[in-house]
Length: 367
Ligand code: OSB
Ligand code: MG
Image (cartoon, rainbow, N blue to C red):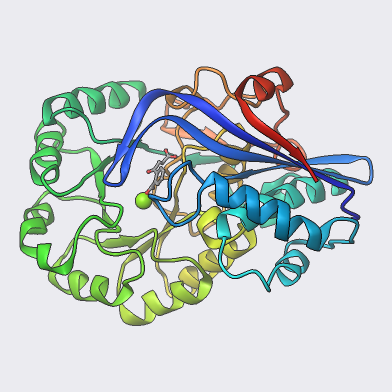
């Protein structure tokens, strides 16, 4: 596919409700919509970098820079055959996985549109709907957290994840567990603890949690191994796994029992599929994470999560959990069995609402 033009829309979209994690609080979510024109077709990709370098080192600012000044010049006017061809073309750029993944997503959208196939078909997905949960940010108090969880449970979410941080962990998780003794419940620390906190965290091991996500440093797979030895609850890695190689390290070190797969963090859907396959080989179940995506990234996540080894419920909630107005014309809704349908149209299977795109754009750069 000859890459004819690339347009970057730096977006800021108001969230329905603020999202607070151990690294910060967002009331509006920033991201970058990447539009690629090729041979009469238009492909869309979402770069899931945020405004601040809290989740990882990338930001919408660094991603705009890397996309405009390094990735675009490597592929503009060139022929890009597929995702693995693209990965080869950008292999000289160290890191910046969120930026690379956004472009790879747009290429998959183009490939699907050219071949008349959905992304799910292209990736080898086997499900028509994906079991999902909801990720709840840190609330004012344990009481308001329980109230928030109750609202989502009432809407039909059969799995709840709560964000934790030092001082807002055991009490919060226990309060939700007390109110919902049978709810599938898990926690996510976003790297807020060290191995010295193992004793503080140990009461979590008695709450019958599905998993404890990324408790320790993002670059520390070894200490997660040590922590997993002390916990019967599965440790799940998110931030630590930035490539299929890291997934192999974690598996070989017994650092976790499951991995949260995010195409963005791994540098592309192709890399997400590789981690999925690696884990499948060793019978390690995986699940699909989320980054508060717009309808574009949500469509991509649903296609990825339709692969067979995505066993645990995904962090892919309905559109109305995030945005009153999305940039896609399509909205994703929760089915009564706590699932969301995987798009069936060609490519990502979504279309862009140009008015919404203009409304939320902080900047538009054509390269
Ligand atoms: O750690 O999984 C995370 C959102 C932004 C950054 C990091 C994370 C998250 C979520 C949101 O948990 C999941 C979702 O998109 O619903
Ligand atoms: Mg996480």
